[in-house]
Image (cartoon, rainbow, N blue to C red; front, side, top):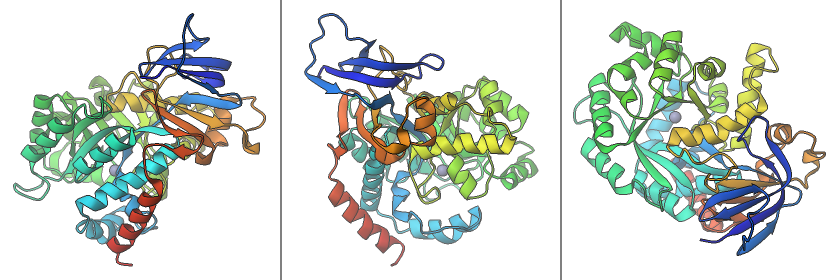
Length: 430
Ligand SMILES: [Zn+2]
């Protein structure tokens, strides 16, 4: 693997508090960062990159999405969540093919790389085809095959098939790919099915990616039916016996937060999607104070419309500050940590998400040539509140360039755009 030296970068390390290094060098060898500040004595790089007037920071981790749903982008807007799902998305999804999933995920990969995302947690169907995209694109991912389980034998309850997927793809792409179980949620899956899914995850040493507590009605129904909150249902049925990633977690009680902290679960706020659907905000400050790992995700491009993690981090901050009338409610560097290292931890990649020796070389360069990024008094503020996806010039995962000077190196962008446009139109019957 190539030895790479990035020179003269302004680095947001996210390693120690407020740590920004100006005009620093980053040395990479074997896919890892081996030195920060100055290269080690005798380091002979195969490639030297002048990163002058660029901000270097860890790649973003989109910790909750349904990437193939790029094909439904902008198609079912301004509907209440139940109508959005029951009347539009679910109807269209019944005709989605494995090839649609491949091209939808490939379109997502193009958008994610262009926006500086280096890893994502995905939950959908035909995940072997998304795995193919991960291997080909060079991205890092945790993939969960979504399952529903109300009745025995219902579609999507094929746990042996899911287990085979988990085992086949675990560690693929030189370890860039991890697999997880994906029971959709406690409002779609029965407690028995959740328990069976958890048992499979324990047996395979895999994690679980699940939705919970997205609406007040879900919580009320859960209490009415089971006398337990959704988080208590998950806890009782073994979901937290493995590393669990809980998407949204909006309507959480104080007791729920205690459970999530004790069981080392991760909670993923999807601020843009939650605001767009009018769902509510995750209790990020309370979760973080309790020691829960809180990450950020875009949710599906069918709800968010975008897969931009820059936008997601910005909205995470703005939403918390507005809702609490407090400009200090979520500090900028905390939001960037949630969008990088916290997400990496939630996906099971603990050595990603910091620019520090020993960490994986998953990083992005942001070109500061744009007027909106000048002057550079506060790099965190510039990235969080001014930078746009188009300012990301270079993206690296595990020491390999996926984008260099705005050019994608692993994917055939033109073909992907054309296939996705055609398939998206067919699916929604245009
Ligand atoms: Zn979701």
